[in-house]
Image (cartoon, rainbow, N blue to C red):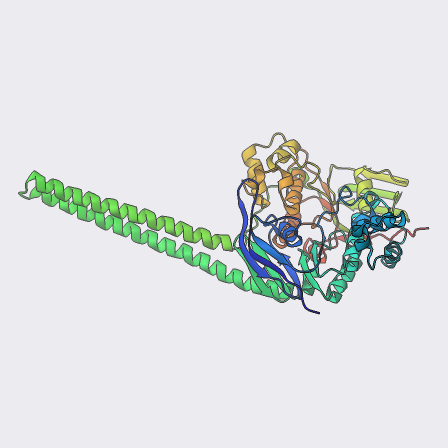
Length: 531
């Protein structure tokens, strides 16, 4: 089978405010699985929409041959209200229904070609992936994030598309489902573009393309090979930056010497003019020449300093940003041995069927594990008081902070600064900006509405709103906080959580993240067997 074409031909995209998101991108995607990585906000998801044709570029064109099928990063029930819509077959089932009612429309019959058994096929595939209790009309707002993701991915594998565009497909998937996703990627024989920050999943691609403000950089191999190449690049770039700074210091010292030398010449000329028997006209001419020489020297030195600053800025822009230490409130500190949370024979309203007994003391760190549907998120809702227990007792001895799977989406019209002010009205704007900058939200992006920011940026802001609240939490609950975070931000999140002095309960399927935050113990939940 001949490989179909998917190509970026001098593609540029400008944001509504006129800013250039990326410019003149040129790349031909290979027949192999390709991973797209890059910092939050650089435009990876937008690039995915350009590849599918959902969004046109500002300049240039996207050349695509064959059928392109996409699984979006956010699978909102408003956009995908039914299982059929989420699996990408709602239009086929609707056409079959119209044909059954007597339609002779060519479009309906075109959709139905080779799809007459679509309903039965969908039912069989749902059973195959362990979701046989669902049907085409099942509402997706009643599904967990992992269940929605599994249905959407099932639709991708059944699509028979020439190209798959998968945007963060491992979001909300448990470890077992992540392994199955990796196997499916390896089995897929057509073109595949994987937009992901999942280090484990990226091990199964053959090429990685990194998107940055500088454009596209292509690396052969999987994530491990990419990381090794990037480490060598960063070492080289840091050397260039240090060299540029050292050169600037040498040039600054030389400028001081040049200016002192020029000033001595001018002073010597002034003395000679005073002591010599020269006319005022000659003296004034000599003084003017001296002043012109000194003025030219100042101008040349100013131009040289600007060039120095430009070289340093360019070298710094190519280096990975340094992660700063956060200024956390002492009120978040939990003394060793202090009781924070106790669950006595708690039975969840959904998921894990057995009673749960749990005691959290001091700044303990706990991870909750379990398959999708086992009740991990439900347990966090119960701890916060958002859901009642079916049986048992919960004792909370502290203020609880909470970030759910969709953190950052609840206030789309707020700016980051406004969000921090809502959580802490006593926080001055300058300090709010500083604290956001420590979390990687620069001054410009801190003033944008959060609906204009990436998922990772929104999560950072939601986390900042919790950590810097007027009443900071002593127990922080995080439900898959690594969702939507880019690779550097996942490292930053690890460092942020390691700085947090309170107790922590986290649900995450990112083994690298869990290994990085020094867990004290783990709780495993099991799936409730459906009748």
